Image (cartoon, rainbow, N blue to C red; front, side):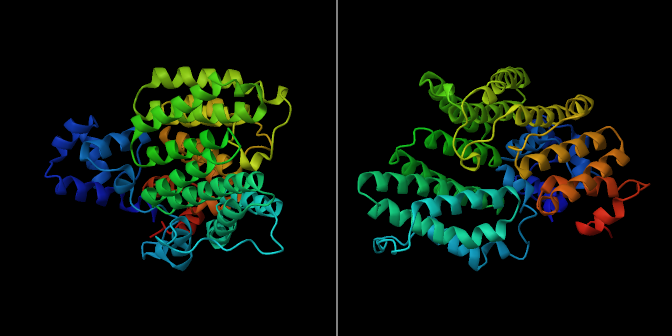
Length: 406
C-alpha cells in the first residue's frame, strides 16, 4: 500500500538505469545515505523535493517512482468496471454516434448540482461514489452541449457543465494513478470550457493541469502554465470579483508549490507572500458562485499551503508554529484539512516527536477517515513511526488500520 514499495521501486529503477547508488546520488543531488536508507527500507518516506530529485535523476515520472497510490489496489482494481466506464465516458468510441437528445426530465440545474455534489464527494475521498456517477454526468453534459436548452445559450451552459465534469474525471484519474488519462480528460475539459461563456472555467481547469504535471514530475511545465494563467487573470481585471480572485490565488499557490519542489524557495516564498496578502480581500468582495465549483482560495488555504511548504523546505518547527491555533473556515474542504493534519504529523515525525505525530494522525482519522486510508503520506508516516524501537500509545491501532503492523 502506498509507499510500501518506494524503496523497492527505487532500487529496481536504479538498476534498470544501470546506476550505482553513488551514480544516482551524483545525478540527483540527493545524499547517498538517504538513497541507501530508502532502498533498505529503513526509511519509508522523503520530502517531496527529494522524491522529485530522485525521479529526475532516474529519468522517470514521480508517479513511476512512488507506484500506485493507496486508493488503488495492487491487484489492479483501478482498472475495474467502474473506472473502465469513466475512461469510456472521457474518450467515447471514435466515429461513434452523436449523443441522444436529453430526456424530457433533464434539467441543467439538476446536472450542475450533481456535478457540484461529485466535487464534494471527491474532496471527502468518496472515490467509488464519484466513479459510479461520473459516466452519466459526462454523458448528460455532452448531450446538453450538443442539443442545448434554448439554443446557443443552452449549448454554452452544457459545455460549461461538460468542462466541470471532465475536470472532475481528470482529478479522479490522477487519484487512481492514471495521469496520462487525466491529461486527456483535462484537455477535453479545456476545449469544452472554451466553448462556454464562463471566462474563469479555462484557468480553473488549467490549475488542474498544473497539479497533474506536478504529479508527473514536470515541475517546470506546472510552474509555467500556472503562472501564465494567473497573469492572464490579473491583466484581465478578473481579480476584482471573488470568483476571479479565488482562481488567481489557487493558480499562484500552485506555482509556489512547483517552485518549492524545484528548490526555488525564494520564488516560492515571494509567490506565497503575494497570495497571502491578496487572500485577505476575498471576504471583502461580493460573494461569488457555488464554492464547490470554484478554486479553493482563502486565508485558511494560504496558511495550509504555507505549512505544507515549510515541511517540504525541511523546516518542521516553522510548520508547527504556522499550524498552531489555526481556525479553518467553512470553505476549507475535507481534503485540505487532511493535508494540514498530515503535514503536522510529518513535522512532528521530522522533529522526533512520535507522540505528536500519532496525535495528529488520530485527529485525521476522526475528521476524515476515508482520506486516512487513501493518502500515501499517511501510510509513509505510520511506517516510519512503526520502525521506531518504542511505539507511542495509539500507534498500533493506526498501523493495523493501514495494514502496516506486522
